[in-house]
Figure: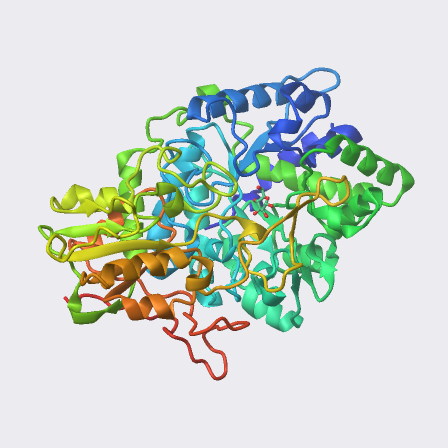
Length: 610
Ligand code: GLC
């Protein structure tokens, strides 16, 4: 597929427009505030090139119509040409990383860790196409997806955003997802963003935004490789990573951003910073801005203090510490991307073909998600072939996550850190609802803890256990007591010091309620099938010993029905581990390691043997 970024006719249009732009108009295009910090009037007054929604930042009642109206207002303002302002369409960005999951009623697909277990690149493409339609239904043009992280340490809170610990598997998904999301970049396409460049999944101890210590050769082999097929497929944007490489922050790394990604790998779109990511480059914000621009970042996600950012860039140019050539390179890339995305030809968001479309959350999308759930589940144990269950069996469904669509969806769903109920996930089915739909004699444990288990009433129990939702550093598992997580911007005092998810990957330690529930039931003589909802492999030895069957269901999203489809035998298991499953919480355990000794190896997965 020839990248639309290479089209000579577009490059000519870029040069014509660039030649008409003032310095302020150019700097405005390089600036991306968060929606809560800017108005449509600001978009015109400061010539802003983009606005974003951070995770959970939603307009009005968070329905598609509210999103379309918001985007329409921003877009109209960006297109009001007059003596001071040129009509350059705004591009709006969101984290639609597993469906357009911020928005109420969206189809929420399994997070990437589950998609990795499907080994089905074509499914990835169909998921991306369906997600694009649900993004376009909201009048949005750009998603910060796919993540191409190769997560090497399960302690990382973003492991679930990674398809696999294996570079080749991640690489195999890059182009299909980009092609599905961007489509032909006409009415059906949404600009994609591969992230986070580079080495986000390779930090020491899996610390989010931490230090990745590797040779350049290792960095290329493990973490850079998935990006080339995405670039060749024409991905329009790349997001810089918070982590550092051998002590230097990626956001200020000219070799990584310019010499390797742009010059060597031929990336012609634009690089977006991560959330206030340049703040970490210096204690002095003016200095940090200069470092980020000169390293090769083209557009800056500057959540709140964007007016200050604009002023600093202008002063750097006037002081000669940032060249006009660098500014023009950044703006050229942004304009080329907007032309390639067809934004100059599109009508206002309210008048676009997919806006407010009833394809949003539609059954055909949910069927794709349900298929993905089925294909993502990995059967780790099936003693006495307890699975598949008979539909007329007397099934006791228990566990804290048995009837919780929020737990199924995980982070970056409606809220940044996710939600923990059914009501916030409009549409879809919990695991319990899915089983109940197909098994007339299934009952939900009253207290959820299985104390009502009774072998005279129940043939078998399905116990749904695991992690509660989390996102980014708040999902890290970190040892020691004084290790807290920084979130936000350190320069303008917006830094928040937050607790990590926990201190251990041992499930019986972090969630003792799960083993307790299992024992409540197994000790009463009812055999147990455990279904684990988690964003990563966990240490499950104690739980495993107590159950007859054990299923890793990852973070399956809104369509819990897919779990029931397989437990009840309509479909066989096909999922294969895309992450090695550890016996104990070690520093790292990855396929290919010397003395590789997992509980379940990469590629493992049982089935019904049909
Ligand atoms: C976050 C994440 C990034 C996301 C961005 C916008 O900090 O690192 O993946 O796209 O901010 O929400």
